[in-house]
Length: 366
Image 1 (tube, rainbow, N blue to C red):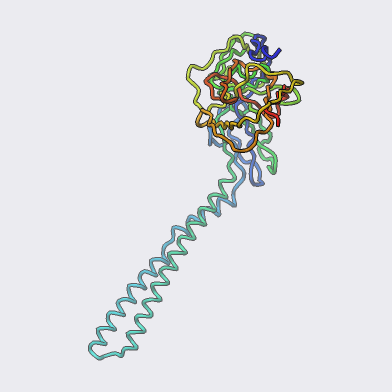
Image 2: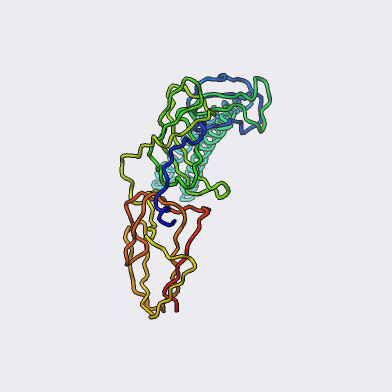
């Protein structure tokens, strides 16, 4: 019975799947307003950033114009610059008159102080000009909130509002990306490890007149649904001519699976860091060790790929050898030195929430 757990049975029966749009976006307005323009209709292809709808924005447009005009007016800055030039000229004349004993030193100090005041007024005018520029940016941003743009490249599949309707907290237009399409597939846990990212499967849509298509595996779920004991596989199906609509049911043919040609990297999650012992004692059998042998601790790291061994001075503890009942794609024979070892075989890792049964062997009991 344990030997049969090493090899998963081939999956040749087609599995049910669903063809969906890659992305679906319900475009709404962040502000309340009345729809003024709807330049797109149902079925129109739109690009990312394209205008889908415009709200009435008379007040915002006027505020933006005033802010732009205010930011362009530089009369205050030029007047402050002229005052600085005049004040510095007064300082120079006062110093010349002081050298000829026509004025007192107090007159020179007063001219210097007036020049410093003129410099500070110039800095204030320049700061106010920068503030006007920021106010213009704020006005333009408020005006931009009145324009709804498409966040993705796709097709308009729904219009929830018409011209003149008030928009508050509901979407206005739905856009769906149908190139490529997304294929969702729920697979039993017994078939885990038979498909990896990059593999291709034959997909047959339930639409008359269509032949089987090739889809590429994009994602393999790492968490199993404990209720149904299945995991999810997501595939990408090219649809450049928009011939296939979203929402179709389909069949995935596992017998036509083609593995990816490229080698998996060492840290690929589809490689298993777990080695399964070749034989395991029955769960009800307990082996007692007559001698207190030294304990060898083995630690495994996916970055290094090889186990690191170290001698421990602690007294021997009970050792539990666990064998999962979950079927692996290829058997692995462990070495006598370690129970965990890296391997190049494409065996799947253990999954969270997976319903597994273990047989336990106790050894080295004190």
